[in-house]
Image 1: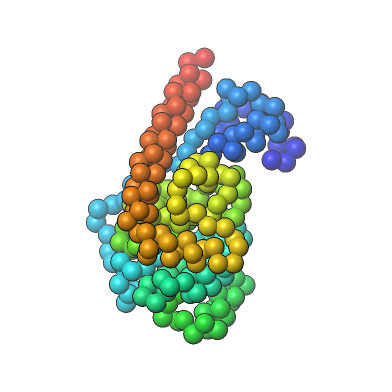
Image 2 (image 1 turned 30 degrees about the horizontal axis):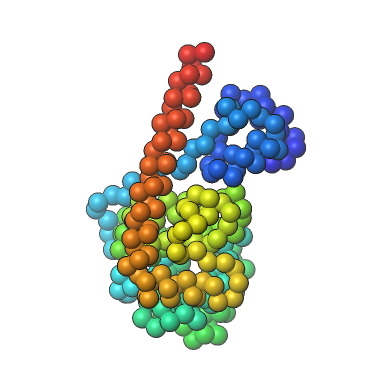
Length: 242
């Protein structure tokens, strides 16, 4: 929140925040009255019933998917190494989607790590995927890794995991702890070995528990999204009538 932006925000009718901590930060930094700040979560994506299987030559039911934007807040090299060092890698595949040409330096680091681990058959970089193939992948996979290392960010991929009710593995930040709940069993940190242990616990040793927890959280987050969107419509109607 750059200071020159504060003056602009004070002049608008509504300021939309995408998570609780972001709303609190905006209020604290800008002095905007709380009633002008509206919490609006992402709409839960509508997943089409008809989808097309991607040509991965893998058992999609044994894939862990990372929907990547290839931005700097996604430490994909850490993700790859932790996955390959986990017991899960023995019979599962890590699938990283998204246009890797957006970050060629990171792409080269990933290729190097995969070669060093002699694991070309364990990690798939799909590049851009058509929607019907991407949706088939996330509907059919075992779990989704959805994370951002930036605070005040709630990754869109987590909403996609909510839409398909898949176990989601996510980074422990204050934002995700606040929004998902501290009781969710599938958080990890950036410490060496943390993601490996979370993958083994949530997708092997306690998969049924992770599935149940993810489904419960999906229902909670769907309701939160719906309620905030309805509140936004109400606020917009009030502004139009005023």
